[in-house]
Image (cartoon, rainbow, N blue to C red; front, side, top):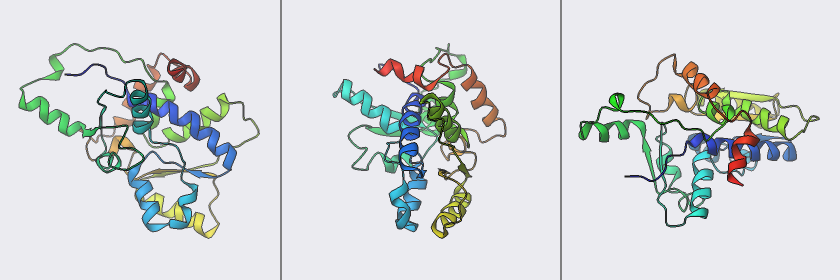
Length: 233
């Protein structure tokens, strides 16, 4: 069994708050939430590693918070990303998350026990903001960083995001940065088409996934990033 379910989108709110501050401070940044993107940069563009955000991914940031408040707890991440299985083995993450599972693996567990979740009652999650929840789709991370900058009143800083939808667009943006011709100060790197909602461990890859994520985001009780992370203080 389990004790508590917390949506990873709260971790996304935490990252958006910190990453927006880091971007304003440094002037140029690439995102760090997609482990496949980070790995690609490390292997193929070592000169650009210095620009990768120093913040943990939403999964790791939230896991770290939980472990700091209960070091004996076991943290299980369930999501769409197969690359998270490698991320949880990294030195910077392994102390915070015990296991990473995909939605497909969770569904297989349900099937093995003949559990039909469509027949079960639902509980409402109210941990995260709209911006944390839309992190899962392409462009959502940049929207969240823009909101973070706005909430910090950094009005003099103008975000110019290169939103990379899939690894091929990531390759182009990184090559442009190396050549000094990238017209952006932030690279949102997502290896999967559509963002996390296009991850290999998703149960569906339909066209409506993005609209469903946006709809779920609009249902958030917390309307700002600051409101969402205030419960952590």
